[in-house]
Length: 383
Image (cartoon, rainbow, N blue to C red; front, side, top):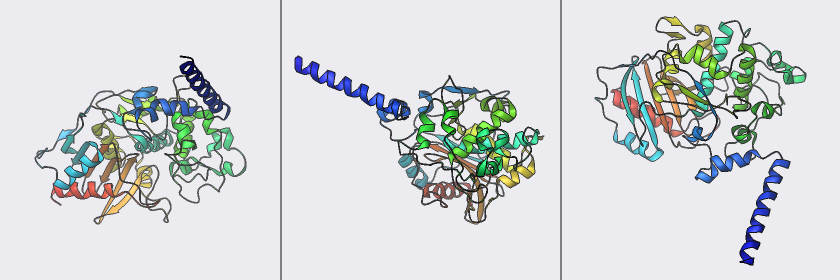
């Protein structure tokens, strides 16, 4: 019994010491990481982890259901697509043709109303919010300095940073985009309870606006700019300007740093479903028009889905760009293979949500799963 008490005492003492060290070193966010992710058997954020965090509701309005194509679900998945979806844990696969649902299938207990984490697909939505704020005159243009909204960027090289630099991932900051390192600022931002405080440590170290470098921190800063410019939470602004006008059929949940501080993770984590995610693909395909109503300026949309930098043809303003099969796709893209892929010439939108993806093949390249989803969807469509 004495030995057991001694072991227990040693364990408790070690645990207390470890927690104290985490707080003293500013890495106490790892306590949340262990509780929400690592102890659940994951090594990174996962599809349903939004349930472990505080969220704010993005309210839907009057639903505008998608129409169904006359050939709805008459085609079958190819054998290759079946194997691939099983291998990577796909939970939703949706093909929209001519603005009508042509094919959809759900897996692993999910259905058309099931929520799952968007991860970085929400960056495209935040970029759309920027376009809306410019359209409404709340932000002057893509060239307005970030320092007009965030005092940390009023001096030095940071004074050259513009809102357009943030939307196009050209901030020149020292952000470390490392998902699997427990000590990177990306991990800290995901688990810390005060995102605004975390972002105060971000510094501009290169001249902004000169080159593309993927950075979730850029979109978080843009989210903070939008808060200041609009006087609304990101969730309320998204609901009022897009979620309701686009006729989303379900409320969404936007993950917060904490209920206390109430900052949305602007680079990540809107929980919704395939049908409602696809609405942004249609909106951009139609250059900002939705059922006869202009929600975004067409010039802004056109600029968003073209490369800002010729040497970085894979990215515009909040949207990924992909060339294959003599076709030009623009897409929303998120961690673990969340995808809304749009081919405007063919009037095709492909949505894939799921648990895993293939590794990226380099900064300017796309993972192989994207190519396979497109190839197999087009085989199903008969192209």
